[in-house]
Length: 366
Image 1 (tube, rainbow, N blue to C red):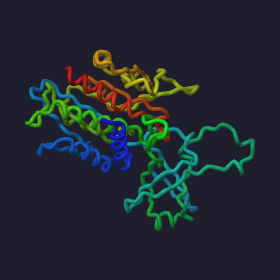
Image 2 (cartoon, helix red, strand yellow):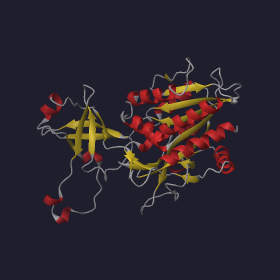
Image 3 (cartoon, rainbow, N blue to C red):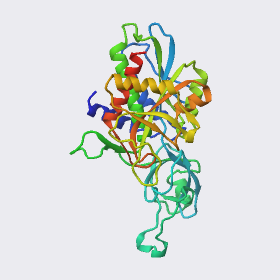
Image 4 (tube, helix red, strand yellow):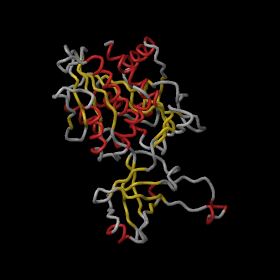
C-alpha cells in the first residue's frame, strides 16, 4: 500500500474522536475500513457488549486461535466542576502530565453530541512577575478550561456542557512537512491511531494473499482482528474480550517510546529504526512471553525487516495484561512514536507498514 493511502486511512480514523468509554464512532470507521476489504457476504465486523470491534478470520485447519489487538481510545479528560465565572476544571482520562497542557486547545462533548472548542487557561508572561516565572510542577487538577462562556449559566444553558462531559485534545493529523518529507506524521491520538491503521493494513494483506473462495484463510490458525476499548484507563476492553473468547496467543500493537531528552528512561529507540519488539513493561510487572518475542526477532531477521528491542517502564498494554491476568502467551510490537501522551505525537508511515509486514510474516510462517 502506498504512503498516501496509509495516510488517508489514519486521517479518516482520526476524524472521529474516541475518549475512553466513547469509542463507538471511531469503531464504526474501523468497521467500515475492514469490511470493504472483502466481498464475501458473511464477512462482517462484530461488536461486543464493552464496545470492542472484532472479526474472526477462519483458518482452513485451525490449530490455534490468535488475537491481534490495537486500541481505539485516546487520552482526554472529563469536566469535573463548572465555576461561577464560566471556567471549567477537569479530571484526566488516561495518564499524562500537566507540563504541556497550558494554552492547549481542547474539544468538549456536550449533551447534544456537539464538540465545543475550548482552551486550557495559562497566565500570560506580560502579567507574571519574574519571581514567579520558575519551573513548576503543574497538576492538571489545578487547571481550567475557557470556552467563551461568561458564567456558569452560559456553560450549561448556551454551550450545553455538564459535569461529566468528556473532552479530548485538539489539533490536526497530517504529514509534519509534506513539501520535504512524505513519511513523518504528526497529530493527536497517534496512540493508538497508528496501530489501528496497522491492523487494517495487516487484515488487507491476510485477505489479499491467503483468503480462498470460501472466505477462509489458507493458514493453520484462526485470526481475530480486534479493536479494543478502554485501554488508556486499564485495558478493560481487552480483558473483556479475552474473558469471552478462547484465545491461545495475543499480539498487541501499540506505540514504541522514542525518547532522547535528558531525564527520561528509555531503550535508545529511533523513529526510523523499525518496529519495536517489547520484552517488558510496567516497571517489571509486565513480562511478555520470552519465546514469543524471540520468534518475532527471528521472523524479522529472516525477512530482512529492521526492528528494535525495547523495555518500557511507565507503560502498560493490552498484550501485557493478557499475559499477566489471563496467562495467555503474548507479545507486543510498538510503532516508534515521539512525544507520546502529548499533543502532537510524531510517528512514521513506514513504521506502520513495516509493523504490519512483521506480523504478517510471523503468521504466514507459523
